[in-house]
Length: 249
Length: 282
Image 1 (cartoon, each protein chain N blue to C red):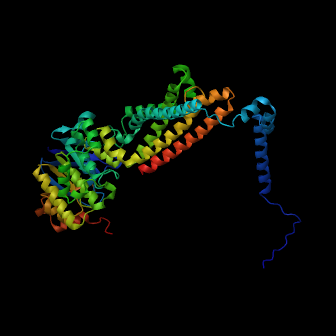
Image 2 (image 1 turned 90 degrees about the horizontal axis):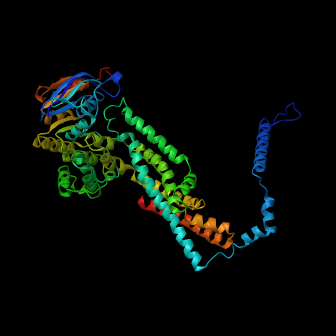
Image 3 (image 1 turned 180 degrees about the vertical axis):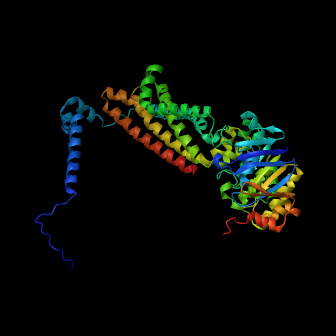
């Protein structure tokens, strides 16, 4: 599904919206990396695309539909198509990995089916296979709070892979991973997204990996698009300028 | 050696003394006035032993009643007290838990993505109504509810069960809601953002974070309910209390003594069971 932002203003505080008059068009199946300094509006943009944040002005279109203008029930039903993976994986500490992963498909289960899954998890083999993609097959029945930070982040990615959404919005998925794990996780995530023809928008601090794996990279700075290009057209100076401290400190 | 230079004052006065004297005096005066008001007189306690009726009652405590018939009756009533508390708690949970879920702002669908509104006007209004309902339910003590209910549903354990159910549902609802509000909202919000329903987000995002606190508090409340259902018996709501009331009215000291022993055993059992349950869960 195509996603389009038309002259959107958004942010937690309407008086100081971090994104102002912001426009962006994302085609179905596109893979986009967001890079830029902290506070540039990457997370706000992802929440906006995922219907987790309403714009103060402008329109957010999924397909050709503005779901903020629709009834709350219709909007909530559509959210099943979207999966936002926050930077800190939102996993309850005392939950087991298998349950945390299965929660990714709640929107596709009826109430009683999900209550049954809560008592006795289903699809154990498939869930373990998804975990195996991230080298976590042996953690299936482990409690989340017994995992390391990196393992937790990979469980978050496995949860993303288990979801049936066709728009993946991933916030800093590699932040807690070492370089080897980061590359591996990147390969699995982009590979699965391509295989399932999912639209993928992800933010990164690892600029090299973003440039290597994504055909379109958007540099964000102070809520504005600094550059929006294919990696081959992005020069070192552009990246340096993107992260340059404006006060020259 | 420190040498203190003598001051040209013949007497020294502690600046704090007058205040202390005043407040001690005030305290003694207050206690005396209150003792007068409550007609408290230790001598009446001694006078009891010269009067035949109270003396026989107190002396009758020993030996405690121990006929098989009475012991069976007393044990059945003790178990009935536990049953009143447990059923009351169960119904209180059935009422309190859904209200607590409704009161929890994290689970509000209308609030997603609109931090500036903090939820829709209607749901805000509904929450306020529910909150005041809870205040009403728990501000009337269970003893008063039992007194009222005995007149509505008649003498017996049903009144006790309902009294505990009503006043405890208010308490459970309030505390459960507070527990729900205190946990990390991120997992719950994230599930809602994926299109999960409110109850699904509750079961998969919120509950796993606070199940320990929830169970621990509920077991503690059950312990309180056991104690309070004994007292409810005195107004006719069944169980150990009602039996004790009957024995007292008949001045049967030996029966009262047995029932008191059972009461102490019951309370310490509830205390022990609640601690053991909470420890087992941790």
